[in-house]
Image (tube, rainbow, N blue to C red; front, side):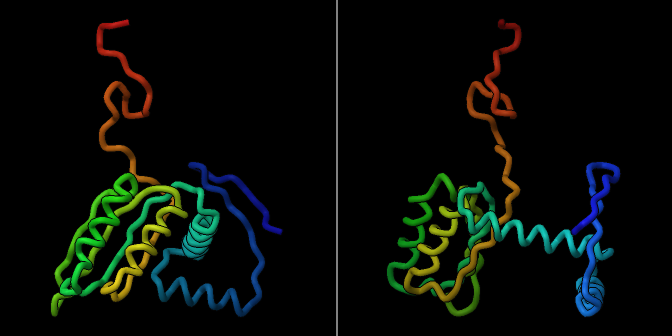
Length: 165
């Protein structure tokens, strides 16, 4: 059972017991990956586990990237990819194309929406004939709105013009 103590700035401390072999491997991981300390490494592992959990549930709003590697000379591929991205315009924020060797392209697509829907979009894109490989990476942190909708402030609350009641 983990013990818990509250520290400054909303940070909480827990105490865990590990078998000696796991403890030694944790120290090796901290050194190899350049973490400042064990806590930073353990927090990163917990975050990764939570993200995976949210992805499995599928209902959580998430932001992420879909990275595709494809052969742009494949007949009909570019219009097919563009059609899928347009079909899901509410989730597809932007895309960047990086030209590689021999008519190959890496495309990085920024997405945000329910995890299950983002996974479905990624699957549709990755399974297009001519796509060599692809991967989706998601995070539970969201991209904040850049501009409020007309009549709303940045927090999404209805705003009134200045001087009017």
